[in-house]
Length: 159
Image (tube, rainbow, N blue to C red; front, side, top):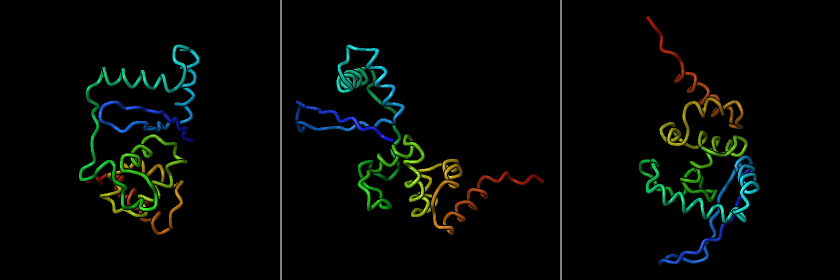
């Protein structure tokens, strides 16, 4: 389960005012934040902690090593998710951080709709191997991916 914290942000330099940004936290992350706030009463709320943490991060790190996907914009909606309002970067965030029960539909959609070269932009072979037994896929699609994983993970024959 994701817990959403909405933070009201006001920009002063040539930016739209009164923007609300959402930070998604897992239950465990939310529990850690609540525990931190209980032990650090100087912060009145998640908002004050978020503001201080964000500014400290900006001051201490000028760059964050992120790798963009070749040929994609992180703000575009992937074509295979035409019916969901998710950007490319949100898809990757869900695949990396969401609990399995919340991302299994996305993994199944990727395996069902994309060709292997496109699939591997989102998932590793190990991701697929671990998820397959727990995914609801058409039998033909599931069998295809089971056979592919078995073939690609088979140890090479020694002579």
